Amino acid sequence: MAAAAARALWRGSVRWCPGAGDGLWAVPVCRQKSSVSFLTRPDRPNLAYHKLKGKNPGVVFLPGLNSNMNGHKAIALEEFCKSLGHAYVRFDYTGCGSSDGNLKECTIGKWRKDVLSVLDELTEGPQILVGSSLGGWLMLHAAIARPEKVAALVGVAVAADYVITTFNQLPVEVKKVVEEKGEWKLPTKHNEEGFYCLTYDFIKEAENHCLLASPIPITCPVRLIHGMKDEDVPWHISMQVADRVLSKDVDIILRKAGQHRMKEKDDTKLLVYTVDDLIDKLSHSV
Image 1 (cartoon, rainbow, N blue to C red):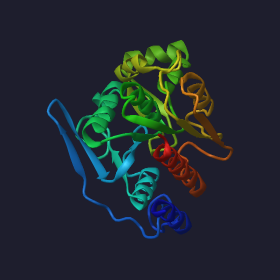
Image 2 (image 1 turned 90 degrees about the horizontal axis):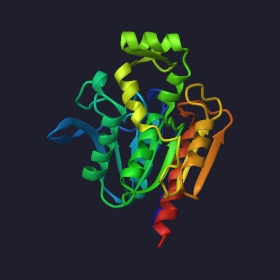
Image 3 (image 1 turned 45 degrees about the vertical axis):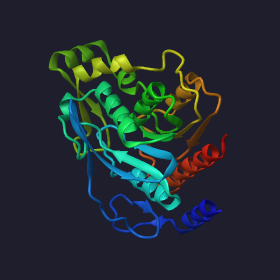
C-alpha cells in the first residue's frame, strides 16, 4: 500500500524543473547537487558515484558515450527510486565525468570492468540495469557476466556493436586513413566539435565485445526503448538485440518522434514507468 501511494504521489507531482539545464524533468522541487563518493580500486582508477540505500530490486544507471551520471535520465530515475525507497546507483566510467583516468586510454573492455566493479562493490541483491546508448551495450555484457545479480534490463537507444558496425561501413580508403592517423572522428550533434574522437586502438579492442552475430545468453526480462527519429543509433539495433537475447520476456517500445537522447518529458515518463513496472514485477515474483 505504501509503495502504491508513493507511486501515485510521484506520478501526480512530476513537472518540468525550470532552470535545470536541458529541461530536467523531476519531482516537486529542483534537485540540489550532492557530494560525490568514490569507489577505490587498487589496480584501476577510482570511480565517482552517487548511491541511494534502499530495498531491492535496486536500479543502476549506465550512461552513454562521453556522457556522465548527471544527465536528465539518471537524475529522474534517482528521484523516482528515492520516492519508493529503492536502492539506486549512478556512476561515471573511467576517464569520464568525475572519475579518475584518461579517456583516451579507455576501451569497451575497461568500461565493462567498471560496470562489474559497481555491481560487485556497490550493490546487494537483484538489480535492474538501465543502459543509455553505449551504456545499453555495456549492460548486456554485465548481464552475461553477472546473471545471478542482474534481474532485468532496460535499454534506451541501445548501441550494441554500433561503433564497429558504423566503422565497418566506411569506405576502405577512409578506414586506411583512420588506421594510419590512429584516430576516427565519429560524427555527432551532441557536442560543439561535431564529432567524438575515438582512437583506432579503441575500435580494434571494441571488436572483441560485439554481440549481435550470435545468440546472447541473457534470460532475464528485457525492455528496449528506442526513438524512430534517432539519427545516431538506428532503432533496428534494438530489434536485433531483442531477436538475439535468449529471454522470452522482451518488449520493444518505439517512439515515433523520439530522438537519440530521449529527453522530452514524455520520453522520460516512459522510461521511469518502464522501470516502475519491472520493480513491481520483480517484487511480486516468487
